[in-house]
Image (cartoon, rainbow, N blue to C red; front, side):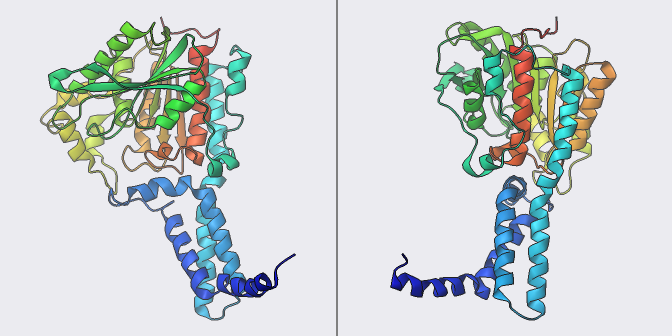
Length: 416
């Protein structure tokens, strides 16, 4: 039974909710956030809005729907009211865009996975491992509640090298049960200038719970330390991992290199040129791969100032250091007998443009090498920072399947 005082408060609450101020304020906030789904960020200060808006699109759909209903219930009059309703509908459509594009993007990557890895590429995967995989490319409830992650063992800040007095560390993530596991060695992004092994730890914890040892490694940063210092650091980390593999329960015959942005660039160079460990698979999340072209064809708007980033990393321009730029470009190392690669690029990336991912994919195809391009049409650079967003759910669904096939399937034949 509703208390008498509460019954008196209900009409006041209803009047408050349908008041013009509340509905207009909610409409303005929803429209502002929804616009970043299609508007590129002109500065790094605004970049998180462009990254995050598509990833909270289900939330925005809900907010825009509420705002629209409040305005309809308010039954206001005049041109302002009509404009407000139009804005509500426009914002609602913007919020729906990623969800509308999702089925086609999912179908395209599913077709590629089967074409490259085989129609039944998970058939040889142990049933226990198959049961742990995400059941769907997108689970709406996970957008709101988060992607479930089970407990894992974590060892942080393990020092693996001290080049020039710089303490380089790694984090180790392992399943709770003692065993021997395939390993994913991950490198963080940050324009080669910032970051640490704690970056993207939700992914590291998630994959460790799926039955992998995940090793997140550090490297020295530009501009103080320029290329190829970072490659030296990656090799030092791999050597350290090789030495401690038995203690860390790592199966050295089943290693994948994975990186994001600048980290993906280093992972590709290491895997495609000369790694001190045998690499069985490569996962590249929006990594720069043709640095000369990247310098000469920067994005617009260029919030990060790509040319300044490359000059800081390499010490000059392509005209001044042409050979170094070529040596630092993974696209120049595509050749026969490389490990299979999953290339994950964002269709609206304004740091590493998606056309660079497509060019890399075409280079793989031209040499007959195994590569899969997963392009997410609505996503921006670093989309997976929102771990439970639609973009990362799609990428995670196929990343874990790609890694399960290449690192766990009994019938997978690695590159000799």
